[in-house]
Image (cartoon, rainbow, N blue to C red; front, side, top):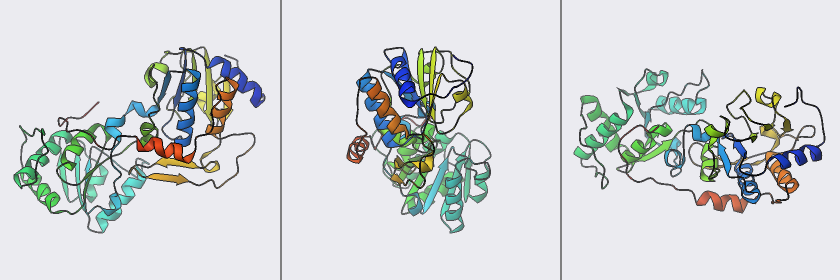
Length: 349
């Protein structure tokens, strides 16, 4: 590793990076905020170049089973259950979700908060169920069953404990026209169990396009995110705002980002990427809807979009790919799973 970054040409930087990104000792990690088009390009490049170590920071907290489900219109819900989440717009934790829930609660949409901790959003709730979130969802399923809402085949609610508040929530849920359970990824399976009886379940990711990169299966057959950032590869390409500040133990580090992060300062090669408003593309938002990003500013300096950088890197490596078309991205997203089988009521880790 050199002591400081020095300016060079795109051609030279890409040539060096392409030479390093070869074989079983090379890996790619990305954040869950890159666009679907970026993810599709990275996946195509990795496949063409034979790079099996590919993963995203999404794997730190979720996967297809804990994140992906049918698109849900939370704005149309007449009853909301918030399970295992602590949205707080003042602390910038799911601020948009917090604002939406509070607005709907002010407009008399029923709100139930299920959490093992004291959370600020509970101040807007009609009923608070404090305790093990998975157990509370199981108790709710049992109470709904007692009220005549059919249990899915194979759903085990033995050991459920009913209380006055659980009974109240079950009555409200059974009467609702469009109830929605919004949960952390770890509780999504439990939430889906209840939604299979009635309503819908929505998993809340941490990153803006976590559902998109997961649906596109941006994950190789080799080392995962944790392994790659713990010395599992010799050459690493890190794209986007990955949640690491210190250079992992490896031989060569390539960082692609719109700004020079602490990690970027320790890179062997830092490639400037277009910022959020300087690129178009699509993402899958937290409600599972595909959303179009509109480019509103010109790319500054010599920066390129991440998709353009990946295509150029592939070309330099002799593994040329084309930028993915909108139809290719849509077709890939359509292949993602949208439902989960009945599972035990448990918090997944």
